[in-house]
Image 1: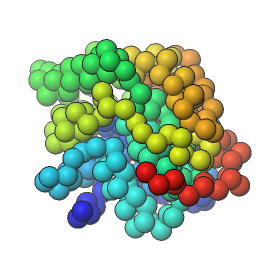
Image 2 (image 1 turned 180 degrees about the vertical axis):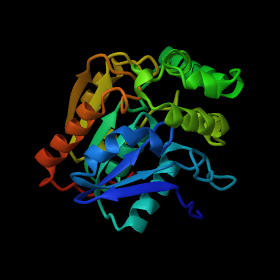
Image 3 (image 1 turned 30 degrees about the vertical axis):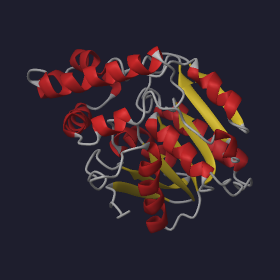
Image 4 (image 1 turned 60 degrees about the vertical axis):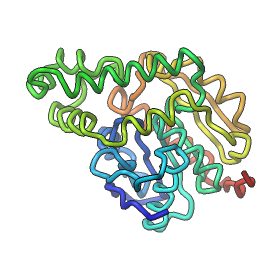
Length: 274
């Protein structure tokens, strides 16, 4: 499969850390955390194919978590990362676990990872995301709305627990990219309602974080990951939403940094044959 060059941000120094956003988002959602993480890590934050400023996957290639992981893996190779600490939100959490299954992760911090939503849960999550995208594409004077805290809450409340904390210019850019993302529908179809495979082959330490106010992927799904992952630790984040990087960047940065430091000496085992 031909490679897709991913738009990305890189900064900081230390052990490699790769940040992977969720469905409809971009690496810019990690901005509130970047100054904190870059104190300890060499950070690579990528736009997945078909999102942000990254081109979509080539025609005929399904926008599945596995194929998206291929693109992130090539970005890791280009950055010189044979393995890295991985942190992913939602779809990015699933991709992080897929890369861990391949032996590319030192640790994984999966924030509300996709992949274990069942039945009506998946329909609910997909419905909320489609409704938010409709608003991003059709709301009157969206830039003016997003410059007001109440407008940010109206348009982004289901995703963020504290949308008023996001800088207006950042929210406007992210909303425009969300509205225009060519990868949204193809990826949604291959994500929600589809079940993650191979979790028993993830041998590195995994921290699963879940906001208690997540209405897109319900917090009870965290227990499923805890049961299926061999080396998982589950922690609930009181009052945080589905995309919590701006809700409490200090808390999340500290969780990633401390978990990575505690487990840095453990090397991921080779991925089992699938």
